[in-house]
Length: 299
Image (cartoon, rainbow, N blue to C red; front, side, top):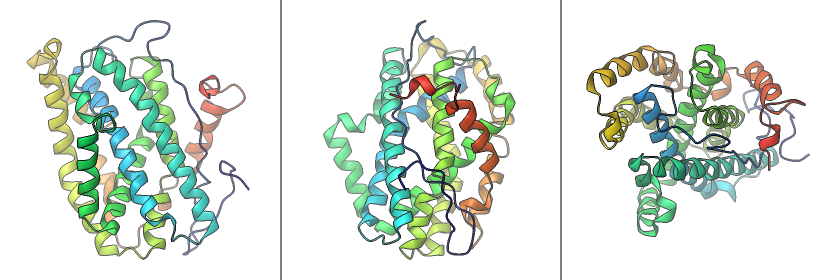
């Protein structure tokens, strides 16, 4: 059985586990055939900058997630989990690669804050990040990855499961990237978590790490978006930004997000407690079926 087959397995407590993550070598065509507009989410300043900030942060974040799992990979004896880890690493590597392509375009298109996240092109900053990771116990590093994967899976479920989000007008290839990324985040949502459990990760560490992220993630991301807006003179329209920011926080992307995150803080929680099987199958056909929207993006 190879990575990418839709075989199911069970967690130690009998839960159904998501399939092996399938590694797809994607090639998105940003800026084709029409150049990408600076405000690539139509007339929405804060949402455009939110996506730019998240895209900028994804490559170094995903490289960190890969490193956190690799610290344990030689100790994993379960062959199913080993294959799932290989799929997770492959998917995260391709995510970083494709977001770097978008990030280069964003930097050229007037989003200088994205350059801050180009750790992989600055050896000193990358060494600093690795040193920070190594300064904490490896169990904590992996717990951060598992918690971050729950964040991305929760956002992915919203993106793919909410028609109002899908109907937001914007650059179609950026939407294609986000839908693909969201789909694969749901495919591998429990891999880092299962490595943490397999290697004896403590519940107090898992819950404590998420508690800290629960408190700080939205304020930190909000400050990043504000900094991005301030770095872009064309976005200096304070009344419009305030109005659109209120709409963003009250809308389907952000409203209620922390409430959806809360089950992770419950002892005994597992990501597969949140069933996304039907959503995954619907989007598998939409994106990668015989006439899927992204079949021709697989390189």
